[in-house]
Image 1: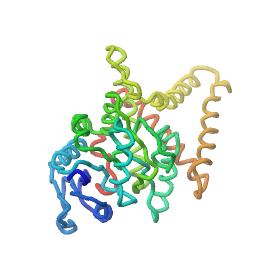
Image 2: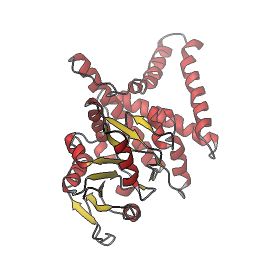
Image 3: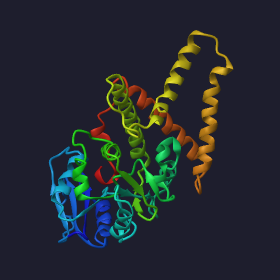
Length: 340
């Protein structure tokens, strides 16, 4: 039991994407069980295997509860977390993790890069490059590339391993929240004085989203930055304890662009326009240009530039409007490709 790992995969339904991921899960060494926590099951494509347990839950069960249900069922010492569209590159993930856990007893969670698989469509290759931008992934963009192993303040639940006992010690994932539930767990780990480790060898392939789903994802992320900021400001006003690393101050930049644009339009309507007022916007376009050139790799500059520009505008306005309660129901629109 102590040398085994169970894998936890929350999803809405099964599809060819999930089945592709399952093929890789089954290759994991010292595998105890794969728990697929799912709302809708297509029996025609369901994979039957003695190491696969499908746990059907009611509709609209959030990701936190799905993961918690699976962890409670797990009989192994370790639990690994993946999304339905992510899977480990190597079969020896437990061996890699155990060496790191032995290196430092204060490490409670281990993750690594979740990078793009080969053979993706043209638009997914575009979104893969965009994900590497600081404008999109912030200073946590190390998760989208294979960088040096290090202690970090955030990992990703699409490529994560913990001891079951330590996951339960932290109270699992918060079932009251529907998004950023992994970030909430990581903040609690840090608040207790424990550590998290990013290992460059702990690699997962994570399928990128098409343009439509990617725009929806960035819209939702814009809303989340607003909600995190409101919660942060509320803690300041009520003098609640704010743990270091609990809030990403870069979130304050997200609505700044749209606020600046709206104020500039308002000012230009009533007062004389002068060049200096457009200086921040010009600098912003220059920065987008430099960033597009940095991340483009084998892609063309123009599509990367305009896509990055559009997404930054979208996130910014979504964040600003969310402060005033103007937002779509993200539970209904936020999906990966497996679940649409």
